[in-house]
Image 1 (tube, rainbow, N blue to C red):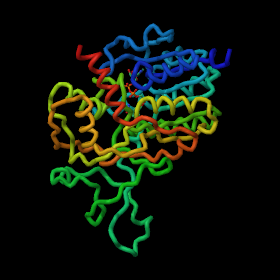
Image 2: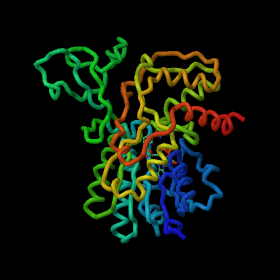
Image 3: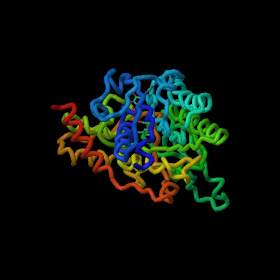
Amino acid sequence: MPRHEREKVLVTGGAGFIGSHTADALAKKGYSIVIIDNLAPPVHNGRWPKYVLNKGYKLICGDVRKKADLAKALKGVHYVYHLAAYQDQRLDFSKFFHTNTVSAALIYELILEKKLPVEKVILASTQFAYGDGMYQCAHRDQRLETRNKVFYPELRTEKQFKSKRFDILCKHGKPAKFHPFREDQQLTPTNSYGLSKEAIERLALRLGKTYGVPTTLLRYSIVQGPRQSPRNLYSGALRIFTVQALAGKPITVYEDGQQTRDFINIDDVVAANLLCLKNRRTDFKIFNVGGGKAYKVIDFAKTVKEITGSKSPIVIGGFRRTDTRHAVSDISKLKKLGWRPKFGPEKSVKDYAEWYRREYRN
Ligand SMILES: NC(=O)c1ccc[n+]([C@@H]2O[C@H](COP(=O)([O-])OP(=O)(O)OC[C@H]3O[C@@H](n4cnc5c(N)ncnc54)[C@H](O)[C@@H]3O)[C@@H](O)[C@H]2O)c1
């Protein structure tokens, strides 16, 4: 019997979208699965979703903010995927840090305190940690060196949005050039969610290195696929556009639709998660996990309309001040380890629409 058939993996937030798919893939490889999840609204309704039931998983309804619940979940575990998170846009700032960051500290605290045989901790970070990221002034002043042209913009102003000048502008008032996010660039998160993830990265890497617990952080781009909760405010364009398209309501695209995203399919994320489990070259490192291609949001809306066969009009307008103009990650670091995204958003839309129809519209 291969050793991993006896190995136990804890997936925190395993009743959720990425966690449940990761658990299924690990189970297929013979790992024994433990899930801790608090099943709280809006993502859940207090009950285990049926896709985690009757699979032989040990299911613990508990809260990752509570040390006793985590201690129970960590018992006899060899690997941890820490995916439980609070993702929202509300003003309850402290909840992001308690759920996302303090929980990570508790995991390391328990590993040391109880001398647990945990061989690796893999934690979910996010592309949101970059905020708007890095831009370069496109002004044709030959005297300015490249390094002087690079800047990390502040949030766009209300005035800028209202005058429909959506691009990030340099100090000369000209549209600046976006640089895809690289793991070694400065992080400038724009909200508490991103800040809590920046903190989780620093904390996990520091504690992991100091106490010899192999640790990997994965900065996912926008992940798409079935089981993405339609009640989760953070589940983004796929959910919003598909639900609108299937209901025959207008598909609403913010700004001018020219903003770009590198959407990634859930199967590619699961492959990245699994790669990190035993690959020593991922220890104590941070990786971007993105789709590798920039899609304009307007084109994504057209894809949703086409694949769902919807007659909904696509309506452009409105904005959210904390949205980033472009969010595209450079994925060359993870690609060097043999991983690459295999599926485009077309598959995500098709799979999500089928799943949504089955679960919510029949
Ligand atoms: N989906 C994306 O596009 C995306 C992008 C970047 C990063 N991430 C990160 O990936 C991870 C998984 O995200 P997801 O999309 O699967 O979200 P999800 O909401 O589907 O899953 C998160 C799970 O965590 C659980 N949870 C929340 N608070 C908890 C608590 N206090 N105790 C126990 N369980 C709790 C929820 O009930 C849920 O089942 C998160 O850490 C998220 O920040 C997701």
